[in-house]
Length: 426
Ligand code: GLN
Image (cartoon, rainbow, N blue to C red; front, top):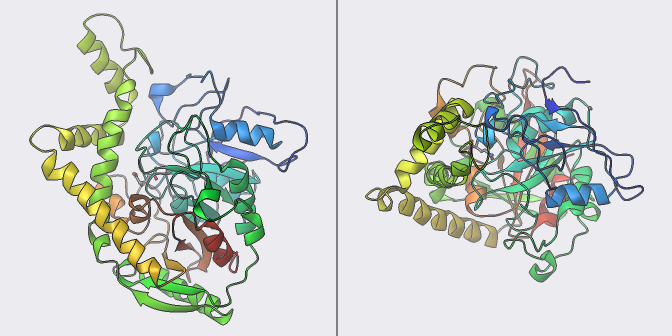
């Protein structure tokens, strides 16, 4: 068993007999509700909370015969890029000791990288599946918004997030996506991919055939990236080219504002979503007495520093007088980002960039500097703003042996295209 602190709990949940995932283990991020098994979101607030129902993805895993070996560690409520903000301790990167595994689904990526689970589920609000996949040298998919049900996923910023698979290879990640994808009457934002010109045979698409594939490279997503990362990125593009793909540069001028817009929107949604953790409806009780004091005490004791920072900033961004200045502006930027992606994808099958502009940071290095940490999400957050699908596949390693991820972005419901392209590499 892993010594990377990747699991918060190792209660085993057995699935049905038989099915496509029979005999396979799927570790599950601890913000996905599991009936009868503690679900903490990496927060002290939810220590001991046991959901009375299964998330839709859990029901589908069980029906497919999977065994869930445990709930994986994560940044508190999904807020982070390093899996160091968990109330249950930080996770170490099994593929780069002494380094962070990326976040917020760091536990999920770590157990797959260490071989402690066959597959894992994470959630991706602004990169939380792709970032840890890149840092741990595994594959992660952030599906098109609406492809996978969010029912039972504890919400951080629901207009941005999707549950997504992590696995050692693209084909395996696609197999898991096949099991969890598809409309759900319990989540009104889900869509049927068949009404969007595709089917659910994702694993079949992992045939490695990139002959004739047109790759757009947004130059903005290379600017400012670490040199070692850029070098490894171009090696991966060369590899795709040698297999029959071609690439050209494209412009995404709006992405300059994407991280800012993402953080305003994510924090605003978080401030509202996390209001339910008041010690009455959910969470540790703040004790008896005056309601205001009890509420404040529950939240003061239950939430960590990063969560408090975001609830405060989000509340501020939504408050009367500032709403137009921050939230509305961020929504305008979001529309612009969407438009830019549509344009770039009208002339390319996929867009490619490094998943993360930097290799995995040393443990403890980024905690005191939230702004730098937010900037590390420059390449992943625009994709969530645009609700598009993206995959992170191992692109190789830097000369000093650190994993680098290649991100491929496709058009809405273009999962098969990014799976096919990514499978040429992993
Ligand atoms: N690092 C980003 C954030 O902290 C993304 C997190 C996520 O996708 N859950 O918001």
